Length: 240
Image (cartoon, rainbow, N blue to C red; front, side):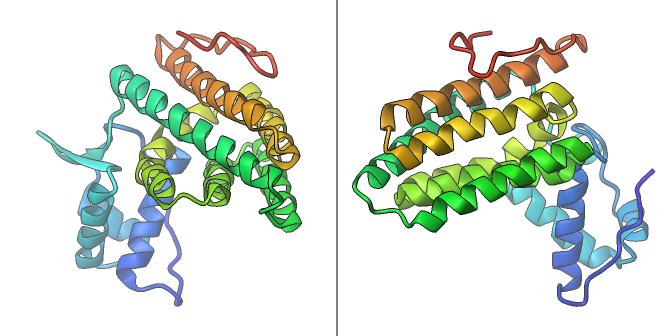
C-alpha cells in the first residue's frame, strides 16, 4: 500500500509526481519488479493521472522504470546487471577520486570543499543511525557526485550522473543493512582524507574497493537473503 505524499507549491504537478515516485523507489517503498499503476499513484500523490503519466515517462528515461508484460514496473537489477554496473562505477569513482586528489595536491581545490564533503558524510552517518534509507541513499549519492565535481572533468561527471539513478535502486537494498550503513561513513572518511592530502593513489584505490564492496553487499543480500558478512574498514579482496 502506497503512503500518501503531500504536494509542494514550489513544484509543478509533474515535478512533484516525479520526485515523489523517485523517493518511493530509492527508499524501497516500492520494490524492483513492483507494478506502478497510474490510478494508485494518482491517489497516493493527490494528483491527476496526466502528471503521474508524465512522471513515469521521465523515470523510464532515467532507467528507474521499465516496461514488462504486466505494464510499468520498477527496474529489476539482476545480479549480472549489478556486476556490470558496479564494475563500471568502480572505475569511474576511482578516477574521480584520483583526479580530485591530484587537483588537491596542486592546491586547486578550496578548503571549503573538504568541509562540505565531511558535512555530507556526517549526514550519511546520521541518516544511517536513524535507519532512514531514503536519506542515506540520497546523501551517499550526493557525496560521490561532489567528489566527481571536484575532479573537474565534464565527461566523467556526465557518466557518473547517468548511472546514479540506477545505483539508487541498489542503494535501497544495500542501506537496509545496518552494518554497511556504518561502514560507508568510515570508507568515505578515508577517501576524503586522501583527497585532501593530495594522495591520489590512496584516494583511487580506496574508492574502487569501496564500490566493489558495495557490490558484494548487494549480491549477498540478494543471494537467498544470506546475512551480509561484516567487512573490514577496507577489504582489499572485493571479488565475489
